[in-house]
Length: 411
Image (tube, rainbow, N blue to C red; front, top):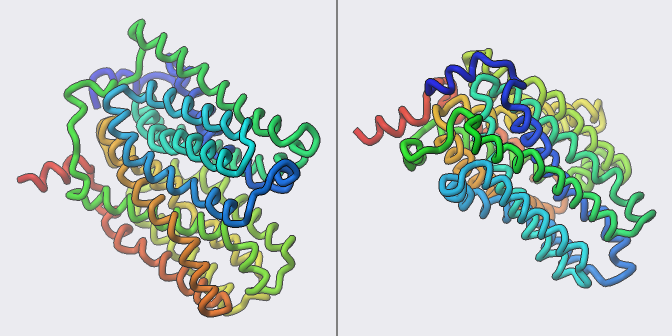
């Protein structure tokens, strides 16, 4: 850590960093409200113009596609203009895309607006871990837990309020409310830029010496983080897309009960987001958490496969607990790097692979179900995916720093 970073490590969490803390949290809130704010409104939108089933499928595939593209581009943007301006640019994309959705008169407009908005969200996904690294190198676990919890909470809000609010004020005005949330997120980062110009910036400003590009394919730890995040994303996107329908066939649940199982899965993620980042810093053996995730996932999917009618809720809870690797990987992007620049590159590298995999996951499940006619192959696939983290767990258990691995690979 630099001399400035060492001094920063001695300061309270609020001292000189209040704007950055607020900015990180409000951006995190913005990241998960957008993907879930449109789909509950399709019934209301249909009163004005047609949204075919194929269009809903296309719009549903936009988030992981945009996130993957943003993950490829954002590290370059961040190195060129800095973390703060990068976050502001991400909010600009997000706001413009939302306004396009508001004024849309056909499903193509909705798809274009959603693509622009979610490209901005994808940028924010990549930039938040290095923002934590820059301003809170001494409180990585605490701030990561805080912003991941904010993301988890904000993901649960739109499905509950979108339809009632849209029915009351109109779907366009309902979408405007989320645009206002984005507008609020501009304030702390614009203020932070003003503060930085007066010499009170964070610990690591991506100076020339800190812009070295890393060949992350030469780092086993970076590859392990990417693989772990890919497994997390595949589980998350497949479960969100298919769990309600799958539970009807697996356990005989009603469609309403299937939705409740999905809600239970999401709720379990909240305590994981709070606990795991802190434990990841205090427990030296990171592999323990990755192995635990595999055990939880495999136990949950095996339970649904063999005993689908017995303690069904328990199997869903175990699958939800397996999601602990999501906050873990976001924490490791900072714990396994020394600089903000490296954290930024690892964030983009790992998220690009994860969201590319997530783009195809729900489609593969659809094909499997169409071919087999039941959900057994789906559960077997999820068990296989969950076991893919085992090589990553072994690598992460070594506790190595990514910059060191890249440097050693050059020798």
